[in-house]
Image (tube, rainbow, N blue to C red):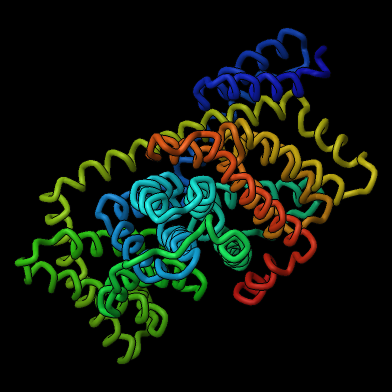
Length: 522
């Protein structure tokens, strides 16, 4: 029995999670129970428990994980300030007269919101409230409309910046280092969240294209399911640009600073949070508040100027030699920082007066606390699992498979897909990936490719019936005329598309590895 405790602990944790018990307490409680059983049977050393405080301290001081609350803040602020709503309404007006145009606009907006925030729930709820009634009114098939919205909402899982990629990147980095150390490589290579962001960009865009291709084909082959809108209001270029520029500016500020090597993902998340505050301040400012709007726009210009200046000039102060040009650059940076600070204070005042700031902060704190409590529970779970010999068990199971590393990858992907029917992506990241990641990476799998494959796989967990979270979010805001069965039916073609994308990435790994190698020289 002692030799099977590791697998029994893993199975018991999965069963309890499927039963709906709180994630953090399930992981920690299961680990404690099986650790005590293992100690009583003489197969577990209680000294593994002593490593937990150090694990918690490492989690709390992990600079990569600091990006989580910042990205959550970005997504929540964009949703509460109704920036996403303006974008969705105007894109629908632009594409509405095209057959299948409303579905195409949903996919485009989903991609833009994913690249701006990475928050699935806010995107699905916003599009479900605004687009679903309009699509039904225009004669769209309820299943196609529901599936389009739910699938577009999940793009925040694979298109960076994404909380999934931040958490997965940290776990993959730890697994990669562990795999190399066990191979006797004591100066191991690293893999960063920025590389995972770059690796997921092309697959994410290809997936958006596949979504749109499916909707276009459906509109052509079955025109009754996706009719064009009749008598829709036209939209001026000025109005369209006013709704497109905020998210596009945010995308360039966050992703651009990472891919250009100006900022780490955590620093870029801070830039994004500041940019979101400025955009929300401009959106919520009263029409007559010209001074407040002017301050915000000066702040945006100052932020862009600071990012550009950081790229062009060495702004470090603690140096022996500073040239005249660098001195002027530092002086200009100080002036721009002062202007940005003034704009941020003005925007925060506007957001506070609009009763938005409190709800955004509370939601951000709630989500962040949930993630980090789960991290602590997962840390204890992984310690006990290792103490019971689980690492060796999984290593032997995967290495002894016929077909070598590719069979091992296929088995892990299948396991993650099946678990996605029942478990949340956070649970899979913190329970499954730390166990199988080091084994797969020790077999010579590219860490960026593996991370993107896992991210795509986890994305399906949001759409797979019966427990896909995107389906639950949509069910909560969908009209009563749309049945749960229709939502499930609409999601299935998009799940198949995601699996096809997973297969495409397996056949052409360059989709994930080319851009990181180009940017980071990996």
